[in-house]
Image (cartoon, rainbow, N blue to C red):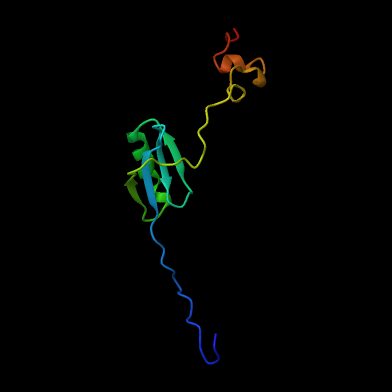
Length: 109
């Protein structure tokens, strides 16, 4: 900065554009909902479910608009198949009474 020049004061309210919530499918055919700031992502079994979620989430993004994707979306969260060790195959971890609660055995008389 040269001597005698003054800096312009900072804009007191920087322009904030509204978020865009996009609904579309990834290359595998899953329905996704994403916002343009990478703060939101959901995976759904149908277009209707994805649109319903997008509409419900608009309250969290003031002035957000919903857009339909024109190209496949890229998931932010990997949707890898569930590994065998990640599934709840038995209720043994919860103790002997858990099987009745979770439907894995007969209920006590």
